[in-house]
Length: 359
Ligand code: COI
Image 1 (spheres, helix red, strand yellow):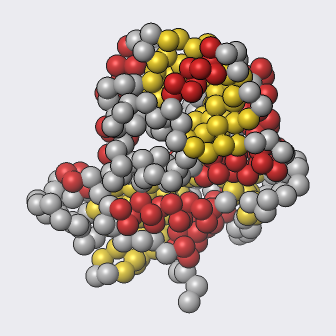
Image 2 (image 1 turned 135 degrees about the vertical axis):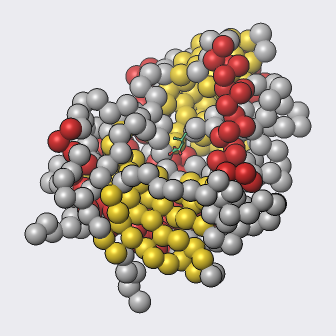
């Protein structure tokens, strides 16, 4: 049975008040949002409503015990005005892996993707056309049982809202490899996109910023020497002629979809990508040997963020970046052109969205 979504649409759009030349990440929200409720063991009451506040019970379990997960996706628009998603089904799979880890119900692909397609179609005019800009989509789910006590909630909300965004990192970033605080340990929730992972990163990030760095480069929880990720993005090191990135076989690292796209892209270009348990000493050795030719992060929000400096203990590594980081720049250009519909979709990653006919 096709997904039924009730619609209550705005009569006056806020779009005319929005300046696409000034859309710092995460501050502008488009006209509508999708909402569905999970109760009595099933998802129900799927609806698209005006974006706005909602009421929440003070004892809602997500606020206390942290059953809250999310995804980050982007819609772009081609020159001929067709809205496009990239690999949306990968986000469904990852969202449901996060849900399973946090004892939350899965959101069926039909509901997840149906919500996204309809919302993007309705708010297609909110997709900023400039390269490097996009309509950011934020699907998320949280526990709503009104209860004090640690157990899985029986009720949840699944919501998707959207907003036009520019680059998440407008400038190359510096990283502080933390040898004290950790983001994730084996057996934990590191691979899940759950709110608590981000909350736990805030104090170490603040301390790194106090030392003059933009972000933390997370190392493993036991030995504090195996590189994991940056929290907002996965990480690649351009060493000699190849790229090296931490393996995601362990459950401590987010299974980045942009990371996966990057690996497939580079391999198709004949560039070697090695996925391995990566000791930070190897990065230092490569730097000392003059072989660290670039470092960059990948993520939906970040796309490709160049890294200009890494601090590890007393070692400060200044890395070629921007245009000088040929490999990072190559993938960034590819993604931007793919998202603008300027090049052939040779990997079959793009889904075109039919725009809703207005009356
Ligand atoms: C994304 O890459 O979409 C994320 O969710 C990361 C977040 C820090 C914005």
